[in-house]
Structures are given as structure tokens and as C-alpha cells.
Length: 454
Image 1 (cartoon, rainbow, N blue to C red):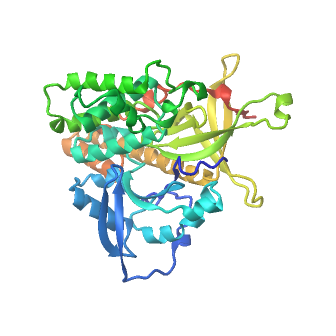
Image 2 (tube, rainbow, N blue to C red):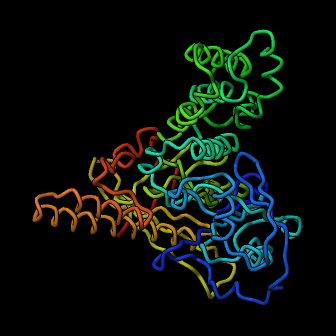
Image 3 (cartoon, one colour):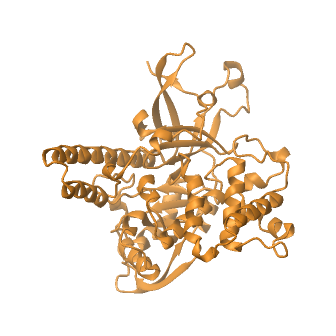
């Protein structure tokens, strides 16, 4: 698996519930700490604002979470919306409430060695920071109902980070749309005297990911590529003018909540939104003769995006989504090789596909990754949550039928779902993304080597 240090964040998830597997042995993190001593910690948010606080080495993730909630005056429901993470250029780790960030930071080199392809020099220079960011178990349906401006601001900045980093791969015109919204948020109404082409050109790295800023003759991708002949600075200026006209009689400071949501709505359309990202490889189909030639690369470096609804695989080189599958249409199995240290773990994804005759058959896509056990744990947690929610909803429906659908019964079912960090189906359509999971992505199964199930 090719190392991509400094570009993509690898994700290890540590769920909060007892039934959520972590992929890492918690006993591994227990050791003696200088309890009683104090240290200054900086808790960052994705708008790159740091909250400085003096605390003890034994402070838990829950302690740090409360500091941010108090500092930013976040609503109580933020407990389900955000989590404390340890983040570095090589690794991204979501912590349980009772985890002690200092302990994990001390073992950071070891984690990087186990779960990334970074070399020893890169690992020695890697330093994690404490980050307050979106909880991977927050459902899209829950996020769509958020109205608090401070919360939307944090989600907006995190989505913008993922767009600029190239993890959210969009259509070219959608990058322009987001750039226009972003310009209005940060530059306010368009002013022809100050918002010149030169100004936008100097700031393009804040509006577009690297692959959009590359010269056309260096691009290999065809999904989110820059197919417009106009220069990017012209396009962002045009979109800034357009959206400024839409809000010409509006005080931008009063419209920030709507603009944050407008930006998020573009990202919500994609299967990978709100995902934890992992790195891996899939094999591409090659002929028997070509496959034996020296120097022929039979692997594709991919990002594997996992969220509460399903899995998405993105070709890193071509900046192109290759696969999006909801959990309802997926079976999976983790295969490890404990007796063969040099063999990489593999996550086997079983899918239903159409063959040449139009018949539905079962095939398996092997995904090779040093983080396969963490992906397995996260998928397992998400599926368990879905099954638990369905069971709760079924019981609530049966009870409401007996009680004449009393209001208190419905509200009890809703509250029970939310306490588990899940969206209640009684609130409205819970299949919003699953029904449209692949609507923006065409699966490219012919570009990956799938194995037929005997």
C-alpha cells in the first residue's frame, strides 16, 4: 500500500458503546502517567481556532469535549454531533469518552508504524494534535435537522477542509458553486474594486483542491476534473458575483447559517460525506500476458470511505469514485494472516452484480489495507446500530398500534433512538441517503478485479 503521508488522514475509530469494536486492544494503552501534573493542551476545531486550557495529564476525551462545549456555548445535542480526535498528517484517531489523549499521544509512533505506510523518518517527525470534529456515527438525517449556527459553522469548516484536501471528489461545476458560497461567507458581497482576478488567483488554494489547480495536460482523472476552458479565478469571480446578487439585500452576517447549510447541501448529495477515510489497494483486471510483464502495476491505490450508510471507494490517482454500496447490499469478511507477517490483511466485500447475460451473481472485491481490521470494526458498529434501530422502531410501532399511536409512545421511541446516537425513523424518512446512495456516483466495477463466488 503506497504511503501518502501528509495528504490523506488515516482513520482509526474507537466507538463509545460497549458493542462497538475498535480494532485496537485498549489494554495496549494502559501505562503509568505523571498523574497530578498539569499540561497546557490546545483543542483545535476545523476552522483552525485553538482553545488553550491547563489540565492534567489524566484528562479524558470527555473532559476535553466539555471544555469546547463550554467555550463555544454549544447545545446539549453536540454530544452526538462531535467527538474528540487525535489528528496528524499520518493518522486520525477518534477517541472514546474515557480515553486519555496523552496516553495515545505517547504511543503515536507505534500506531503510525502499525497502521500507516510511512517511513521511520516521517513517523519520527509526526506529531498529533487534539481535534474537535464531526462524529462519524452522526447520521445524515440527524445532520440535516441541525439549525444551530455555531454547529453549522463547525460542520461547514470540516466539509470545506475535506473538499480542499481532495477527499470529497465532486463535479467541476460543484467546485465552482462551493467556491462562490465560500467567497460570499469570507469576503462578503462582491466588490469589483477589491475582488479582482489577481485577488482570486492568489487565493485559489483556499477554494479548489490540488487536482483542480493542475494544468490540464497533467490530469489523468475524468470525474471531478477541470473541463472548463475558463481560468479558475474567472470562474470563482463569476460565482461570487452570482451568489452576491442572490443575497444583494441581505446582511451576510445575518445569513451565515443559511450559507453554511447551502454549502453542506452540495456535499450531502455524495455517498462519502461524513465518512472516516482509510487507505488501501484494490487490484485492477489485467490480461494474463500483460500481468506477467515486469513493471506492470496491477494495483490501484484507493481511499475507502465509511459512514453510517455504506462504503465508497475512490481512485486516488484519478481522483474518481469507483464504487458506492449501502450496507444493505453488502456482505463483508476480514481475512488476516497472523502467521505470515509480510502479508497485508484484506477486507473482502461481497456484492451482487450483473454478468454479461444480465443475470445477478455474487462477486467479491478484495481490499488490501493495513487498516483492514479498523474498517471491519467500523462497518460492524454501523451495521449493529442499524439493526438495533430497526428493532427499536418495530417495537415502538407495535406498541403505538396497541396504544392508539399515543404521542408519548412515539416521543419515547424517538428519545430512545437519539440516546443511542441514532436517528429515529419516526422523525421522518430515514432512507434519504440510502435511496440515493449512488445517485452521484456510477459504479465502475470493470476497473476492479472482482472474484466470482463459487
